[in-house]
Length: 126
Image (cartoon, helix red, strand yellow):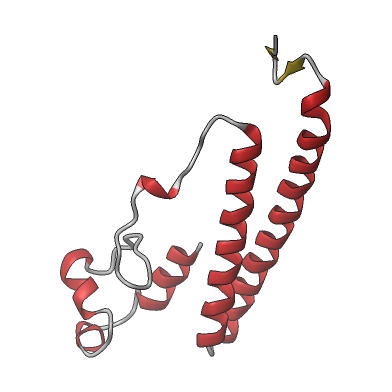
């Protein structure tokens, strides 16, 4: 979603505008294409995904990811003065909060049920 916003905001930028902006170095490698990088310019890697196969560990990781996304949207909102962009970001931020709540509910259910059952997710615990 953020990539879509970046595309929409830069698609009509001239080469001169890009040369005189912080996007100049990015443009050298990617032109106006959207390539996922952090705000510091660190390329995206699959190391962002953490799955252990343990439902509790995985849900805690999901909870952390939702909070990191929410914090990122908060930070972008502090920097942005574009009302259209801010409207989209506020929606995305709200969505992260809801996801966090749902993952929390799932974690609570698993923590309450897991120790009491012989079967968990179709796997028999002997």
